[in-house]
Image (cartoon, rainbow, N blue to C red; front, side, top):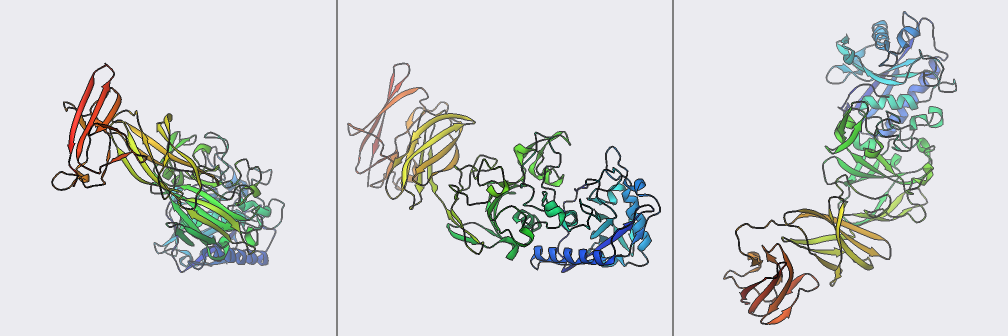
Length: 571
């Protein structure tokens, strides 16, 4: 549980020394002693050194036990707005109590602040015991309480608090401490921190798969999961690689080398992250093995209402305010389930029977808040005997050109050479309304084309190009705004200057669109070349092979007809 806004990661030191300070009360003392505390420090050291893969090393020190002057109820009583409302006073008292025995400069950053401090208190947590005066695992800031404590010329500020015993009354595992200390490193809560508020409860990362979700509770807190790709990405550690080219990719389990892949979005801060997990070691209790895919949004996209702040938050604001997944309709760190109807965490991992691919057309789908999709699709997901994952990254469709007119748009696209395309179409959308569905025409070498007619001028449309194959359906989209009408300009045949030779003639084989501008009420166009009826080819264009007279008859809704003639010279 994070109770302060702390947006700057404190990573970077070659070695980070962390002080675990045991703190007793006048009426509540520890059940376990030095050996248990030392084992705890060793376990935390092993855990964090594994997670950081050499980018930082950690040393956890057990400090002398501090004795507070008052009862635990004094410090642990809850106020209407805060759990353990006066415990910050206990932290100040404890630090002063051990000041002569602890050199706090060993635990400070370059800014002379101590932010690597863990307060360990006796007993079980308030979550696990029927005593509201016990303590919640949490992370706090003294400065936020207007307390400026300086010891050994170091300002004591952020600290994590955890309890001695687990939910069963045994000595604590490292789960809660690892979760709270990770807040000090810069990570946020991934579970739905406002429960059923803000539209309901989010699935987030299915609890057990992520330390910052509820994985800190795995095996009663004794087996927290490894940092996942989201944790590594947020902290800027591990081995993240952008996916930029098609091909076959392999991933070792993330605990081995911290390897993961990044599929960038269409705005800064929006990505998909791909990792491999194996149910062994710290990941033994995550509920499965295989490929996991996460959607992460830290952009300026608007991301729904917050019951706590009573405003709509951007994705970036959700991260800074620890509301990452509070609104289930706008989760900003979400684990995609391989089976859309999944009810058990084992069904979240790829591959599943019949679910070895993910694209803009699958369920779940690769899409962004804008409605756009990545140009890539992931196919052929498989897991090897050693637990590593492999997949193919393909670019199923690529829009090669869009030609935009007043009342129509010509779209050409290319399908991956390995896809057996059975049919295709272009869906034209105006907002959430479907304007038209037009069949695509196959050309050659995997190329397709479609001319979408009867559009409104000066209007933005979203065109979804979709192909149906023997392996599945794929799509890509593009947004185009039709050209406006030109006031006080006579109708004319649209011919581009760029298509012409320097003297105004056209090169032989040039392909021109059969388009007329500035006749908003035309019902039909009839085209002729040297008196013979012509029409556009499958790609939406007419090929010029010789000089001649290009003529169009535009039949208007009022019964009149405009005739426009253009002499074409081909050289």
